[in-house]
Length: 166
Image 1 (cartoon, one colour):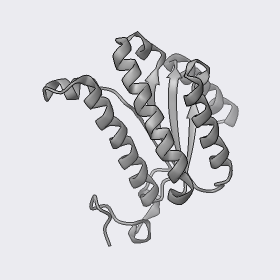
Image 2 (spheres, helix red, strand yellow):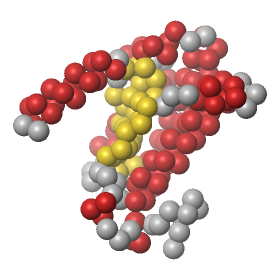
Image 3 (spheres, helix red, strand yellow):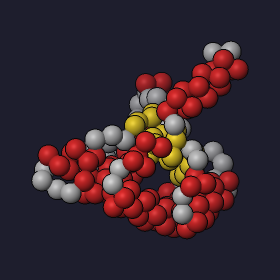
């Protein structure tokens, strides 16, 4: 049996040893993708958000434990205001959908980074995803980094690795 994208369902995957436990990507190039196609940059961001949803679903279906996306760094605030506003609007729409689908889809959606600068509405939606995630132990984890600083994240990861003895 195949999913709509031609990937095997998790009960059809033969060798779990070859499936990574965690995949992380940095969302980059959505605006350039749209521009190449004669579309507004915001169309690229929308396509990128849908791609995140698709990849997260496939990672879950394949039996991975974690999928992390670095979606919006602190540097992205320097973009034109209308572009930032469009990205934040996409985030809000995605969060509203997620709040309604997380439990059914068995996906724990967690946000990382400095969310204190986001709108109160976005902060409330993130709080709600946190509450739902707490009710889903042992489920697939989708992590989203927003308003993050790459160097800080590299330092945090190196410290965590050193503390684990790895």
